[in-house]
Image (cartoon, rainbow, N blue to C red; front, side, top):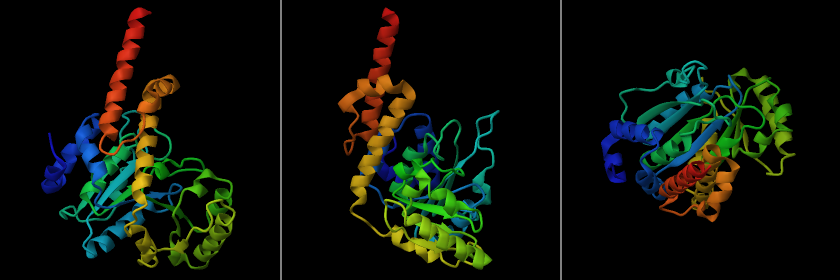
Length: 299
């Protein structure tokens, strides 16, 4: 079994093997260790299709590497209806040096998951956050109510495109409650980007969250990328947020696998405990499987 220290020393090959184990449903002890010892910050990039998430990620990577920060990316792709695999392969549109040991990119197919992320996104994020300084989670293009990224990432960045009417839609959308920062992409379009940024500020003023920063960025020129810097600062309050997210993920996994009855049967056992989140979930799942098998045998 790989330890967290071995994972950190092993570089890309070790992380790739650990992610394969996670996607197969294993590595609970390693995940618990990684959750207890985060090294970096996880940024969630979300927004409608075509807004420029992959392009922005490609612009962020060299900027972060120039500061000496290691970067991991989870690119969640739409799925093929035939194979279930990633349909577009967003990682192919992210500019990076494949020989750079400080950059790791992983594609994940969303498959039947709603909310813009894949089933394994959260445990993969936990591993990457323990091995890299910055983790970028690029969601599938999302709509008004797909806000699951807020339950996974440390900080959420919502992207809007000039002239796309996003501001008017987000005024009534659940997604307006999720971001820590709103970026209007393609700022090199000039007046259109400035107008959309102004509309977003007015729309966000109606949100119960209060003021959310809005900035204009251009991946083509690099202008405005510094708006992301405050999100990378250490924040002691993240520890509590991460524990809440871990518990929310536990409950979501039990509900997905065992339904509302399974969630009720698990009861107070589904409380996130530092050091035993993933192993605790595995234990609860085994108990529910045994319970269901017993009832089936009786029935």
